[in-house]
Image 1 (tube, rainbow, N blue to C red):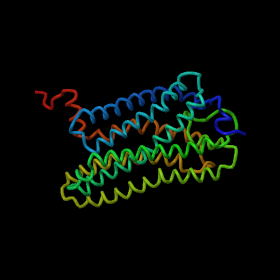
Image 2 (image 1 turned 60 degrees about the vertical axis):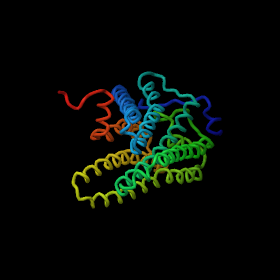
Image 3 (image 1 turned 90 degrees about the horizontal axis):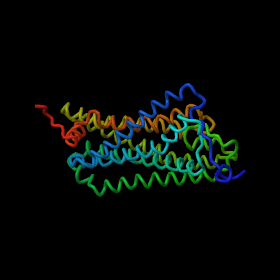
Image 4 (image 1 turned 90 degrees about the vertical axis):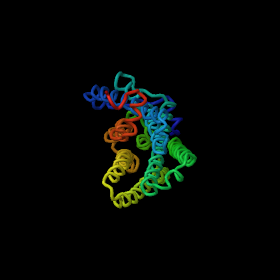
Length: 312
């Protein structure tokens, strides 16, 4: 028995969805389309946020970070999946596998913290509107985004470090489409109770604590919105905050299913489809959720494309 590196230095075979061969051609088409939409939607949000001065606000500053995270997250897993679905080569090098493990943990952790920051921004906008510009000044926004990135990287260093110290047994075959933590835990051939306990604490800090903070902030937001007498004011507040809550639900729901259940009850088949959701579907939907009914973004797009509001 050796450590992660000793046992599997030659690399791994990713089974992907080969146990459902009839699904592979359908998945190849859908995932290619979803990935293209993800690249287009998130790149558009970043470009508009940079180019239009009216979008130089804290909300779009954080949304820009979220879009960049989604681009990185999908690009760290989807190209490998498309190669696996398209041809017979299902291998991944040891270095590539470690990189996927570290990057997915880091970016997932950063998004957890960033969604809390975005909830705080909405709380200040709704509950402290008169002090919004003084509280959410550019310096604080930069500090909060830096905390998000450092928090995610620290989470990844801790969990990936614990994982790589474990001895793994069995074949070099991973029943997944990318190198994800729960799969490696299933392959551990020593008692992992101590390691899993440490990982569980790290996951509670990075998943449960942020989710609780977000829910708490939205309780205050809901109370403040219900006190607003204007129906149009209520609709605007609920529209902006509702889109953020939907993103939170999509992300935390699937991530909680994968990372907070014990190793014994983790299903590799169901885990693959849950991972498909938060690595591909959620990053594709985020730009739509935030911008579909957003007048500021539509106006910015018109200006950038040089389209007037009146056609004559």
